[in-house]
Length: 327
Image (cartoon, rainbow, N blue to C red; front, side):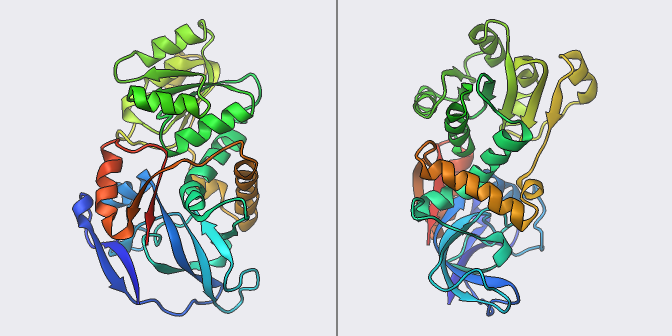
């Protein structure tokens, strides 16, 4: 018998319930995996609160990323076998479980250089970082980059990877401890956004030149000031809204008035839409992690049954780096 954390209604962390579930045999093109570690992400709270609708309706098992071992394969599956170490990060739900069935096309094999906790903490966040800095805006040597929430799960990966690519990184953080963590992970400069005017500080740090790109997973609290951090024709990349959704009555004219800026709201599902794209992105991620250039800081672990507590800590901004749930 398998177990999972499900929501039967939307709401606060208290709607998460740990219960037994029945699993069918894996179907055509499916693989059953036994989870060893499960990633916790802010997007999980969006589904829990109802900000994002549950893809298949309620009840829903949350969780978009995880790592584990193949225990069975369905008809038509040839690339995986029992005992393979695998991970995933692009499925809308199903992760908060001891075992699950998943389409084989959503899985990637893990290399020996990536452990299970790191894999569970990096697949969604690491693949997000991959498309942000390798595809949405191609960061190269000499670029000036601003990373909001630099001590968060995606933020720490972005800081390290951008630094590895030769960019200068400015990171915003909510406390001195988080700023120190961001610096230890590649940020050249840090700004305490709660007590400092981050746009003004960016101007000081860059001597008025400003940034080529802003990566913003915060949302409402950092907009539109993020646009004031960009040089003309710079790019604003919004990939999350931890503080709430961005609301502005006339964004197009705002972009024009602040220097012919570009703005985009990319999502992982569009970048990893095919098996081939996912495989290429995962290889890039595992190569950079396997080389040691980017480390995956798993700073918090919780038992799967304590997912509600983990959600409360995440939403209170009390976590840094990656958080994983252990079945």
